[in-house]
Image (cartoon, rainbow, N blue to C red; front, side, top):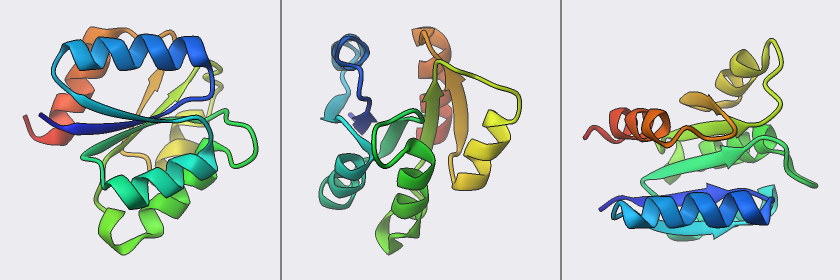
Length: 121
């Protein structure tokens, strides 16, 4: 099954979503902030990244830019996740290199559909 990198600073959100994805057979790696997310992406080479946008320090937009700038990661799909969906956030996320955008709280069936599309399943 696909390797997913979940970059999420909220422990409750991170634990809940990673467990739900693991139950569906995904191999889930987690990172707690943008800098760790970039480092994990480079080291782990995930099949897809779920990127919280509101992260301490290096935010999700900049973390995504840095990941997409890496030669081996430029085509790795990134889905932006945010609880604070403001007008223009979707466009800003896509401009930063995200391939899709979803809001929190996560509706798992909708997120799984987006993930399947990006993973070519």
